[in-house]
Image 1 (cartoon, one colour):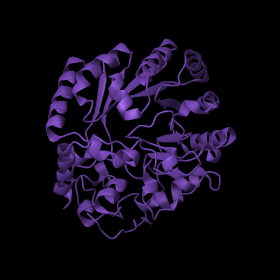
Image 2: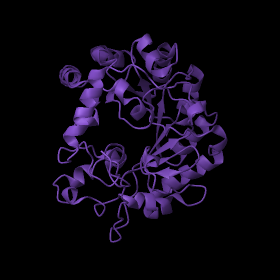
Image 3: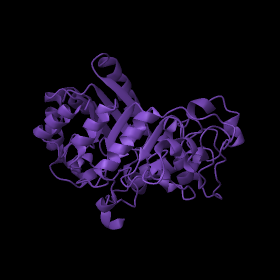
Image 4: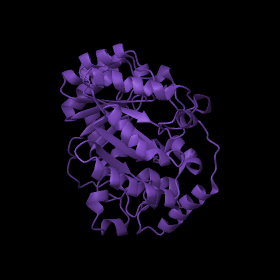
Length: 376
């Protein structure tokens, strides 16, 4: 699974890209949890390097002028930022739809009230399990589950819509039926049954987290039954592990097409894992306007469109549906970010990737390497 890395070829004749739909603001990498599947990079940003309140507000202004419609405040844990309410209010004032992606463990009733007053429209609360021991196993944080329930209640009480993000591993998937019940109990309108995507710390812990094919088959049936039973009551989104897929996912709607991500220090990325691709250079909002980065930044141009694609991808009927799949995954599994995504059944590595997942699931490794600033 090793290959000589190659560089994406920008399509110099491509028209100016449409404005991005969404902006993910990673306000901080600080977090009280140490989740084994965290998608933050292994090299975490220190608080001293974080953008200031004024810099984040300027970025939000630029995003609104660029045509962004949604802003998602994330981390780390975004509620550790004392200026979160001010940033939400500023985003709302320039017409951006606001969403908070949070663990919920630091949420208080007063914070929920302040966020509602600031204009927060939606919150997504991550649940690594609905069992306290299972939650602690993944997060290395005791007492987190009850705090999550309290956060959901506080947010619901002030009228903020809630999505429950149920993160699935082989350790908790047998509790999936109960997760649907919990989603209804906390007042969620939507549940994301999200199998771990193996980037960042998740990739480091893949062998300890990935489910078996038999578990996946059971989970597929469970989701379908729940969708039928809860139709009109609870929207169920479902993401399987890429390693068991036949076709690659359209990663964030295609590289540099619908989404941009800004790190705590202001780097602008096409996706949250893009920094794993070593030959790419990323501009920062402190040195270059957001619009210029979006339209002309070399990292965004590298895999935007079709010019970079291998011949098989360029001739595929699905090329404008999956846009070649995930570049970070191609690097991790094929050693080349410009290779076919190995999760595609057309890839020569497809069977070996599935075999890898099956072997790791069968081995039953239990050791977890927790997210840790000391390793950064």
